[in-house]
Image: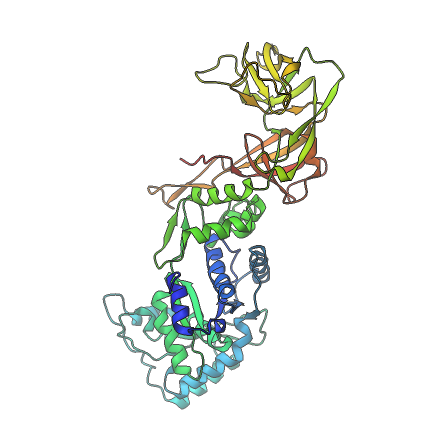
Length: 542
């Protein structure tokens, strides 16, 4: 028997009939899913597909006070579809409110639940601590008849918020705090958007296992943070009874990334404070943010596969994820020339008014992607940092008297520099050797440097958003990280070759010698295309 520990449990439990596997992904509709949630999505849906089983999507909407619930639900659906998965059933926990209420009545009749009048502060005091056992509520021994009467009146709306709760009767001396007569129903006078008419709502720890049981979930796969909740999960299913199969909870280690923010409350505050735009800000590792930045689902699947599934929490360097993104994009991204910080290069011995078309491969590593025609003329633009008047050691780009290759074109030699009154370089002059045309077989001499360029006459103005890490980890900082002031640098005056005009939303490109970029449909405007830097060509993490 092979596979990770979850796969082995499934095979042990189901034997040869693994198609009976039924999993679910039960997120709380709070904000947008991030890469940690994506690991849970990947585990639940991938295992169901692997064993020929099914996976449901169920929204945990047991708290009616959550804001923007509908938007969060749509973001969850969109993220799951983007990852390439399809749920077999879509449900809300609120779909089961009637049934969950009946189960609560069953527990009361069995003497397994009681109505408690302690307020929130008293509940905390009576609960005890990790070193001290809890104390029984003075209302713990109410009769079944009184509990049924009070619970019915709670449902009817007779009591104010917090006036009473329904608690499971388990063990106030349990070493597991979750088993100390946990609250399973509370009074919240707030209309539910999917289940109008209710004023009492089940807690997650009560609704979750019983919703699993109702749906016939065989294996409830969740993060290791729920390990201490498993005894309560099993208690609820066992004491309501009658479920076949009874779901089994199995926990896996969560995924943490360095130099990234996963806390949804903190992300929400950053949005409110205007630090970032929205949940789809490309600096976030939300599914919406990664998608907008240009990540593709295959990179996440490969990353999760390599990270594996284990009990322990995985703390992974973000550069590992970036390498999977880089490897995925390198296969089929069109390689184009774009100059982010342009400076003019004039080839003084090239015929004035003449333009020729040069053939270049769309991806040198993938000949099947074909070639394209690029215009070349007397006036070009190159990167400003591809030229210097005083070259440092081992500088192989352009400087006075040095010869370099223009990618896909000719050898050029710098002959002069033009400056304005302030001493700023405005133009670089050079001569070219017509015999050195790329592809001509010229081999009389070699050059060490190759630089990219765009034809000035046909260049397309673009904006390049140079995204980097939003934060850097810092153990000495209050939040455990510090913000990166250069998480977004905008190259407003960038120029690209004319083939870029054919780009469609979400198309990916490799800007030669620079980075991978994606056309951002949200930021692009009429007359100026905007591209997001997905990841640099080589890791720059330090």
